[in-house]
Image 1 (cartoon, rainbow, N blue to C red):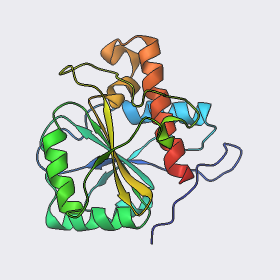
Image 2 (spheres, one colour):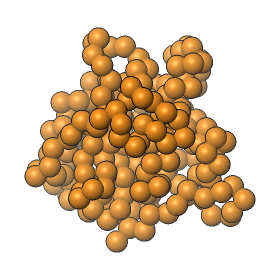
Image 3 (cartoon, rainbow, N blue to C red):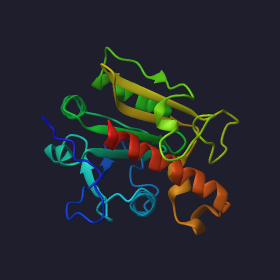
Length: 210
C-alpha cells in the first residue's frame, strides 16, 4: 500500500518528491522540461509546501513509481502501455497514487485508449465547475482555464475515480504545462502564466489534501 506523503511546511525537514512519467510508444513524454520545476517553485512559494525542487523521471511500469505520490504525464503524440505497465499503473493508483495527464496537443486519442487498459471498467467523467479542485487556494468559477488555443475547443477536466477518490486528472485543450514553462518559451502574458500556475497549485493542493 502506497503511503501518501503530505505536503509539509518549509520549516519541516521532510520534503516530498514528485515525478514526470516516461512512457512507450514514441510520444514526447519529455516535452515542457521547465514545467514541473516552475510549478514546484510556485507551490513552495505560494502554498508553503516543501516539494523537492527537482522532479524525478519514472517509467510507468517501474516499481519506482510507488515512491512518488504525484506523477505528471504530458506529450503530443502516441502513448503505449504494455500489459505490465497497465497493471503497475493500476496498482499505483489503487494504492493511493495520483496521475495528472496534461494534453500538450495530440495525446487525447492515445491516452483514452491506453487508460482503458488500466481501468477497462471505468470511464473518464467530466468534472463540473464546482468540483473542489477549482476552489483550493485559487478560485476558478468557470473551471479549467484556457492557456493555449489549438482547435477552438473549450478546456475540459476529466477524472477517473475509485470510490469517491479522484485518482487521475486529465486536463484537455488547456495546455497547463505550456503555461508552467519558462516565460520566454511561449511568450505568454504574465496573467496567462499565473492562471496556469495557480491551477497547477490547486491540483497539487487538492491531491495532497485528499
